[in-house]
Amino acid sequence: MEITTLQTQVDEWIKTIGVRYFNELTNMAILTEEVGEVARVIARRYGEQSEKESDKSKDLGEELADVLFVTLCLANQTGTNLQEAFDKKMKLKTERDAQRHVQNPKLK
Image (tube, rainbow, N blue to C red):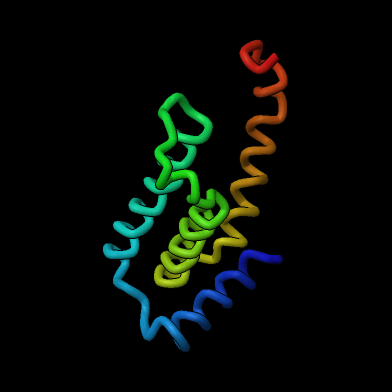
């Protein structure tokens, strides 16, 4: 699925169910909160922190989807075409890193 399709899907949901977008600063705070929830799952499930019983039911995919949803909201609110931005970023990373990672002895 294209990112532009996801942006449209989120926009339709906001307009029909969500009433309106929260303002950009509120969504930035929500995004930070959602990233924190992803960090908590990762730290406890894959890191050295012990996982509390209440954390075991957390779905990493759901938490990552929350981050994606709010990111799409912010893109819509700011007129950012994430598909174009992502494609541009992938091109840049591909050109810049074509040999960098292959030659990194830390990754061997």
